[in-house]
Image 1: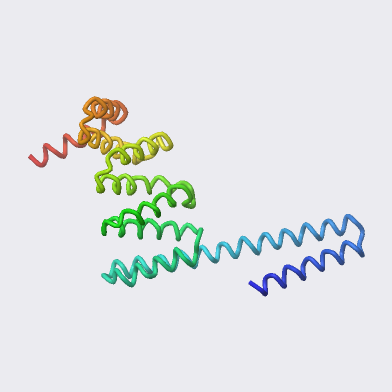
Image 2 (image 1 turned 180 degrees about the vertical axis):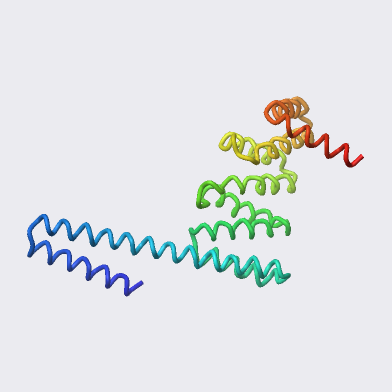
Length: 209
């Protein structure tokens, strides 16, 4: 970090020297070139950090898959703590939150999932956090909050591939809450929008019978 500051300071000194000693057009041209080089340097550094974070996360998932859960989760924490706002760190957050949910450590899992839903990069992956947060509230017998999060998801991502599953689960939670009219409304909307889903379920049920 200190070396980077020294390099940046040296570049600024060069720019100032050029401005004092060359014609305005030439000075501007050189300034633009140097700024472009700085931007390129920053972009390369970001790519390197992202790559390192991804490699670390890949190692962690392989360790977990091999049966060494504690060691893998330690690496997951390292990715989150060391690589901060990178896509890999947010993927690590989902893994950690899932484990916390399994352990019924709802408060910490909720905190991580809300962070993921609000800030995950790239933003296209944010919908993935909703089913986990819904499941968290559902498992914790907080059906009202689970339904609220489901509504939020459906409002923000009406075309997401997870919509049918979220709608079906929301109808189920309405039933458990004793809200039969709301459940029927959601089931009706589900069958209207996704009639093929009913056909698939009927086919699966007939095969099981």
